[in-house]
Figure 1 (cartoon, rainbow over the protein chains, first blue to last red):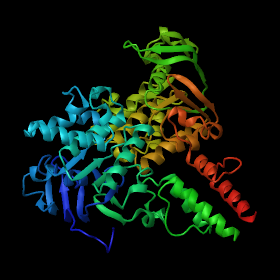
Figure 2 (figure 1 turned 90 degrees about the horizontal axis):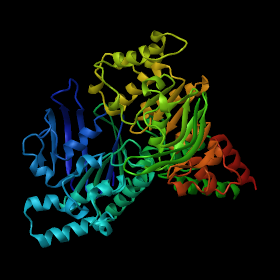
Figure 3 (figure 1 turned 180 degrees about the horizontal axis):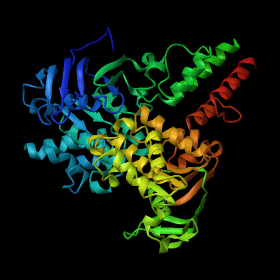
Length: 294
Length: 266
C-alpha cells in the first residue's frame, strides 16, 4: 500500500524534519518529509550515517526527548509532537528492539518468562493479566516451550526473539527493529525473519532498519532509502529495485536481484518486477525459458 | 605458514571448541571459514596467532610452535582483526591508529609506504584526522583492519569483515580481499556471507562442532548437499543452479545465460 490505496491515516508524519544531535555538527536527518502507515512492514535502509537509525529512534520516541538534539520542521508520532510532548506518550505505544539483544535484556531475571514479565510487573498489572500477556507474547515469537529456561542459555536468535516478546507483552502496537539480525548467524537470522513474517500475518506494524535487505524483501511492503538524512528513494521493493543501478552505491543490492537485472539488461524477458528472493528469481527464470520455448 | 596438527582446544568451562583439527594455511591463498555460531571459528582464529594455546596437539606459525611464543611476536606473521573493532582501537586519530600498525609491523617496504597503502586500500583518507570513536561502528571496523593491514603481516585474518557494512564498505572490503589475492598475499576470512566466499575464496572450510566438516574449492563446497547440516546455506548461484535443475552448477551470469539459452532451444 505504497500509493493510492491507503486505508488508514499515517501513524508517523515527518514534515521537513531535521535533527542535529547535541554532539554533532551536521544534521542526522535533514528536511525529511515522509509518512509511515500501519499494517505494513516498512524497511528503511541507506549507507552508514544516512540517518536510518535516527529515523527509528524518532519513531520510537527516543529522539529528541530522551537523547537530545536540535529539531527543525515537525514530526508527529501517533499524533504526538516529538519535540513538544513527553517521550512517554510515544514509548508506551512503540516498542524498539536494537541490534544486540544482550544489551537489551535485563540480565536480572532467571527465566524467559520472568524476563518478558519484567516491565509488566513494574507497571503493577494484576498477576493473571501478566501471565496471559506473557504467554501470548512468548507464543508469538515461538518461545513458549522454553519459558522456564534461563535467559543466558538462549542462542542469539532466541535472545532477539525474547527482546521482541518483551515489546509484544507490553502490547505495543508498533515495533521498530533496528538491524535485529546484524549480530546473528544465518540460523538465528532465519528464526527472526520467520517470526516477523508471522507477526505481519497478524497485521503487526513494523518499521525495520536494515543494511542487508536480502532476507527481508519478501515480506517488505515498502522500501525507504535514506542518504545523508534525506529521502533518496521510496516505493514497493519489486518496482524500486527493477532498475537497481542508480541505488547500487547506496544500498546492498541482493545477489538474486543483481543476477536478475543483469540477465534482463541482456534482453531476457523477465518482466518489470524484481524478485524478492532467490526462489522468486528461479521461478521467473523458469517462466522466461518456457516463454522462450513456445 | 600456519600448521595445525591434531589440535584440540577446551575452554576452562569444559566446552570443547576445537576437536582434533588438522589444517595448513599457506601464504597467498584466500581461505574462507564458514560455520554456524559456536562451531569453533573464532577459537580457531585465536589459535592461529597464539592468543589461545592448544589443549592438545601443536600449532606452528612460520616454523615456531605457538606454545613458546608471545602473541605480540606472532602478530608480525599473522595479523588478526577481531569482529569487534573496539577491542583494538586506542589512538585519538585515525591516521595515528594506522601509523601505529605500520610502525609496529614488518615487511620489505617501509612503514610510511605501508601506512599510505593501508589508508588508500580501506578508503580512509577523508577521515584521517577524525577520532575513531566519533565514527560509526562500520567505519571503526575499517580503521581496525587498516591498522593491521599496515603491519604488513604475511597472513591477514579477518573475522566477519563485511558484517554491518554498507554498500561502500562492502565494496572496499571485497576489493581488499581480492587485492591481497591478486598480489599473492592472501588472507583468512571468517564469514557468514556465503556469496562473498563464492566470489573471493580459493579454498573454503566449513566447521561444525569444532571439526572440519567440508573442505575444498568454493564451487564444490558451496553447493554441497551436506552444507545445510552445518547451518550454512548454498551460495545464490548454487541455489539457482539447483532450482533450475542444471546438470552442473554455473559460476557466472554468462554461464547461467548460456545454460538458459540452451534450455530454450531444446
